Length: 528
Image (cartoon, rainbow, N blue to C red; front, side, top):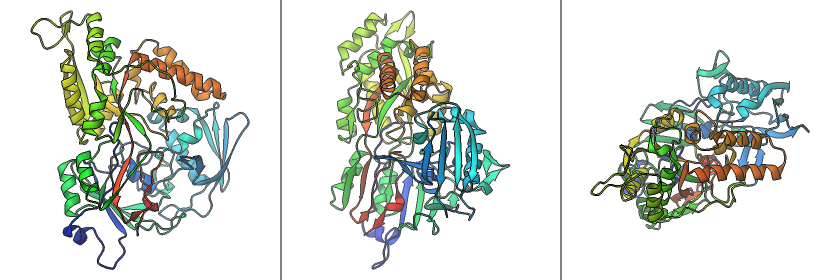
């Protein structure tokens, strides 16, 4: 994850638009076509290759994370035992999967058991390591038993994946880790057609327990980010675009503003949702990135104000910490590292990286101060940021090679450790700080980023402790320690705080944001 987070929803304009995506004169428009920089891929909700926005339309969780806290979804209510180890969920009745199968306690158990059968894949979610059993109490009551108290349980159950529900009929041999036979959830939309790398169609679920949505058809159309997507909007070939689940933005801010300035669109922005970062591989001992001084120098050498103003036109704000202050537990006083080229140069000098007369790149013991930075090639702004940072670091004697790859490749590098530096982003409001911090110790996420830093073992012990703490003051203290440790070691270099921005036709009503940041509540939208 990932990156600049600008979400844009916009209709095609011009005469051609009314012919292709608009309703006939006098008819109510009930369909939307959106551009996606990548295919929806495998929609198995218990794995991680599928598009989260698409999965969010089809599958649902027991509870929902909202700005007001955890609210009921497929569970109408729940009880928590005094020791915090047992959660009893009372399920919503008369809910059916999209293939007609009943949603009940047996279905919940089947899904939880399927996820837990592949628990190593889900190790980044601490809950997966805490679940002992899922027990059916009666048709609409299910019990979740944990090995120890774990305060983020409900938060992690609210995520887009993996603790969401697929029809048991779609499972293979009672499980999902080896694939599924279909993609039937309980959500407001169901997948009805998928042409790989071309498009996918989702139709409104007429039997949805929450009521049939006003928008009856949603098509995800695969288009390259940038000019191709912008032109498709202008021609009316698509209605809107939004960032994918790894933060790749399909059009840049200038194009977004051009449409907004026409006066035909509404612009809505969320509060800060995430932080765009550069993750530094502290465990790569044969590379300069393993040195704290080098990481600190990079931090000082990046002018975030310029990135915010010139690349994002102010829609993303400069970030100096891993989490914005509106994230729970994140209002912590941390050492300031402002944009200061002279400080960056001094750090490198003191660390023994010298710049010989006439040389462009610093060296130490015959090794050049050279690193690779990976960015998402589907993002219209990450390449621009990478080029800017490359030029900034050149000025202090660091040679930075920038390499664009597909989102899946970036994610794979993060888990295998085959990187020096790479763009990423925090999990977001619905997940943080617990999910991003849990990922510090996960081999599928940021273990390589953190394992080479001083005090790594102490860091992991504190992470384990904070997740089981039942005392609020203790939790605050532990989170402050954890954030201070990674901040001081400069293993996560913050760039900007990203808000989701919606640019939509003025007659599209019901636009809202979810705490998860990766989904849009299409079921709440309608054209006036």
